[in-house]
Length: 289
Image 1: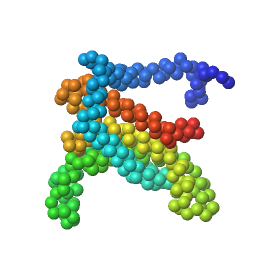
Image 2: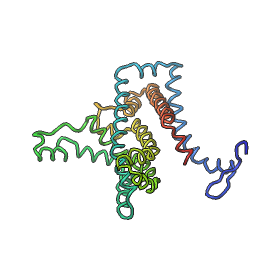
Image 3: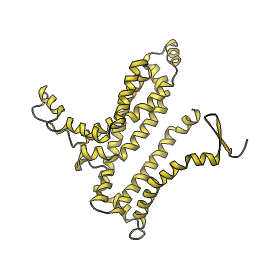
Image 4: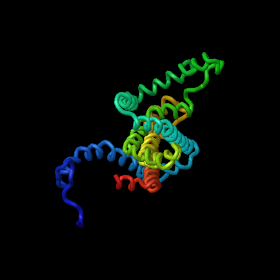
């Protein structure tokens, strides 16, 4: 066969291209109105208002204060990705090897945070980490420290709180990948004399890489644009680029410069996504599914 097929198979039915387009039209219209149009307008202002210029982008990429914010954003996003990966893989492995009530409890524990407001979870971390919060009281009560530690409004607090919020986005892809690995592979490796560590290193972990790479990419990109948690947990001292954009729009009323910051972030996200896809060859995983 040659050429593009005129019909698509979905759920046992054939849909013409016109029917497929009609089914996708509500989503496409919503995406255009709520995302593409506002983003395009903001980028247009950054490039053409008050006149065609790249001065806003030059300012964003050369002034030290904005460079520090961008580097901090990248550092926090990378730290959150690494921490969520370290926490998520063992949990996903336990979920993949569980069944019945235990699996239901584990899945509910992962999904429940998604049903809770990010704002509520962020305020919960503020209660835990504040000067007279639960963590400091436990440390003082255990004799580890004699006075309250400064836990809130630090980069570590931001990383911890963001990791808690974004953990489900790492657990679920890894769980899906691990769930698809036949148990026979593990038994076959042990029958051939492989130790548990060798089985993990040579069989289990490589087969889980599609879920690991998907989860890392998703968490990293979400962390780059996170707003509520860094603004409340980190404060002005740990400002990230999303908070900076909000400040430029709401306080400075500098829409053109805010658009330039968004443009820089968008360009970096696209660059990371393309580089990530080429590095790990996600198209190979998708094509073999």
